[in-house]
Image: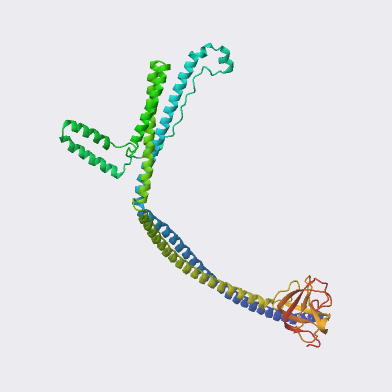
Length: 459
């Protein structure tokens, strides 16, 4: 029991000592935790300030985008004013275009009808010629000529039935007459009403003349090409008379009557096609004159130059206004960017300062950059009788200490890199290869801020 009492007497003091040590350890843990919480609070405060500034920058950038969209929409809306200004002249051009298109459609239809009539007349002549041959010399031919040599010898010529273009556009186009034609027609109708009080013979002559002059042309144009068409019709009639004489000598009276009718129809179709073609050309000339305004070329050119100058001045003013607005927006954007860069730089600097305070005493050995701490060990005597030092490394050879960084010959050098220069070793024994490396080998000269020197002559 006495032995056990003595043994237990040593346990109680050791337990007291352990309690003291545990209390000290807990106090240190509490102090470390308090310090860590203070640093975390300061860091969170900085992050909150940075996020607030970033939110302001994003809000400003969004307002700039809204202003830019508003400006684009305003410019697009302003273009409609130009359409309103040009609407009266455009409407006149629209009416001229309708008249020209109707004239074109009628001219094409008339030309096609004339061509069809001419082809039909040629086919009728061919039919009569073939019948004449079959009834005359062809009746003496043997059947082999019809069955083997020329199977189509007794056949009729093919019927030409071309497909005319669609008239959907002509059906949708309204009938538009020039203003001067409408006024002339009204004046002539009034004149016809006044002439009704004269004699009967004069009334008949005047009425027929007035009706002929005042009747509107289907194409909306004056029949200026009728005399030429009538002359062509007379020529066609003379040619048809010659053919009538020949036909009277060779064929019967029925053939003469059919030939006369076909020739008259062909001549009428050609005259109608010629008249409507002239009406189409007249519509083109009228549209051109309306576009020119019916003025002298010099006046038109002066007005065009004046209009171009005004448009150029307006465009220049608008361009200057937009350029000034763009410059203002660029300045605001640059200021915003500079504020953002300053904020980012401040955050980066704060972060680097914190990290540098933790890692300033770490020695680099796998890579060497500016601000890294390196340990240099002596390797021997180099060129010039000075001691050379190489950085302690792993897989990063040929990092030598600059001879200007130290004085004397210490056992080792611990320093922070402030500058490094990359070189290529030249021939051995020359100034370009002070460390006797293989020619062509890359090596680096590191200039450092000395932190600590080993014991030696330089200490």
